Length: 259
Image (cartoon, rainbow, N blue to C red; front, side):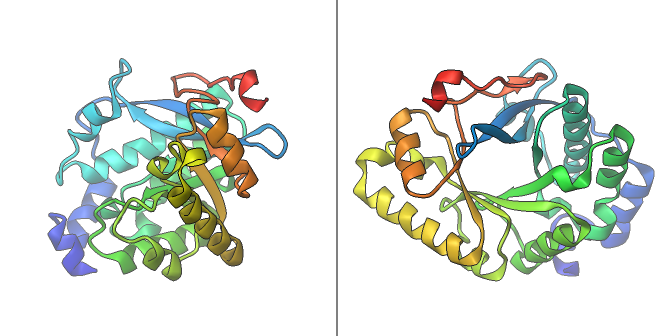
């Protein structure tokens, strides 16, 4: 683990000092929130917090400013502001927050600001999902698995995003079973007319059912995609068909998307 921290540009003591000093991020961020729906009862299961610029600038414009020097501050700021925004908007259901595993040097220490924000804004920690993109360039996979296990022990839920798009895939799932995996939108697109994609998704659903992991399909744009995936056993969905991300607001699900 120490070698990983050195590769990230600092020692454990360096990062501990940044945590104690509460180093602020040098640029502003804000959040858009996109609902995740549960088709079984037509409810909002969760909202995903998506980072944006202060005037609604794209996620890319913000993420491109993240460096080794500010990665830790950025990750911490995202957690706090995502919770603050969700509490102020009175969002329903769970809150899904993306985190950067390479910014977490020690789970118990780096989670402190999350607990403080949840307590300060009155947002129960059991309503928080921490998700990581499977394609994230994780320098130490055992370290990621340890983070996930610690977060689960603290009472948070966990998710792997963009499943099927990254380098880890089934190997990561064999080491740790999160509460949710989110199927990559490239697999979702036009799945109703693609037998190869259908076979892959059926396989993922069967594996996750055996492992007691819920499957979420993201990037849903058409009713045909929705219908195939629901028939395949996936009831958690997210995408423009239901609602686009709402900047500093609560997204309203399009009523026609249920029909």
